[in-house]
Image (cartoon, rainbow, N blue to C red; front, side):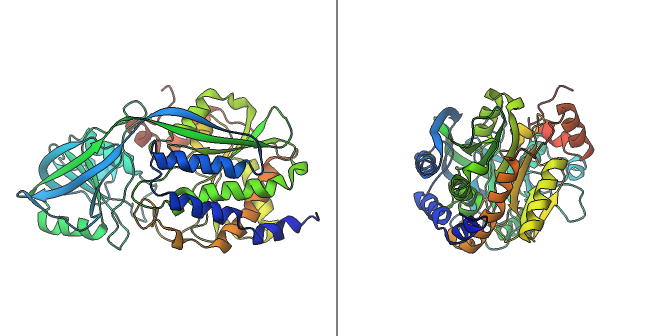
Length: 442
């Protein structure tokens, strides 16, 4: 094979796209479901074509199964169209009533300035352009809980009658404290116009059985003490196909494994592919692996979560100089447009490693719209994606994986105290403490 023959093979490969179709056709891949198990087994089988020591590692989780949900006023439902009101996963079952209060973006100062006790708090899913940081859904939820709210309504900022989903709960208390539902942007506007300041009721019906999830593991390359983790997550929310989040990431994992198998002789480090389970309910699979792994032996993490949505790749480098240098070098050499951000990003499967100082990179697509777009809605479907984009990005990410596994790539681990300092400086620490995601001793 010539130096560039692998590029032609990747540009014409249907391995990744075929796996993406296989995943979306499974249907519900909610953490702990039969569909998630089927997706993990299918990913194991796909990786077995190209890698060694392929295996599944099961682990116990708090299960959650959706029932009916609603918002009502005077005993009558105020939103009746299909999918207009959906429970947020790991919301507790129950009914809550109180005065509806539209808290806008749900910024910390908006909570501080408002009496939320006993009320149904509604917030948007985005933050304004002028605000200095992203505020995660779970932070807004637990600010409502902390303020004594009786219920929580999460209003999408994306047009198109698509209510958002996304889990609540913490690692120590996996079920949330108050009923929580998602509503479409248009439904939220109607609720605010008609009922802001008026009594409403929120209801959630769900089951919370014990359940099992699985991580998928496969390995390539020489036997070395240090390894590079190339990761994605195989689970998805139960309301859609989960093509963007994160079928595409797992399809990319398989495509990169195919390409690396043909270039195995170029690898100076062991590469371990991991498709995590239960990411969408609190990074459970990646937390489990990070807790049992000697992190000194993990040289770097390359995590695919949100790739293929748009053509330009965005790399969250967490200000690891060696990672940014590798990204820039590969991008320049392949003449492929990319974007990088140095800030800390504690919201995907790289984070259980990065929080303890392991060099890590979260790869997604640069998008013009704030937030997840179609992801986390029932519009997260296959036709939003393009096989050409998957193939082009697979070329870049394969080359980056080779760079991470090369002898010349020497990233330095960071003192966890320095990670904590950076989180404080970026304004993320307060929210992480509130959501139970702050792992450091203060």
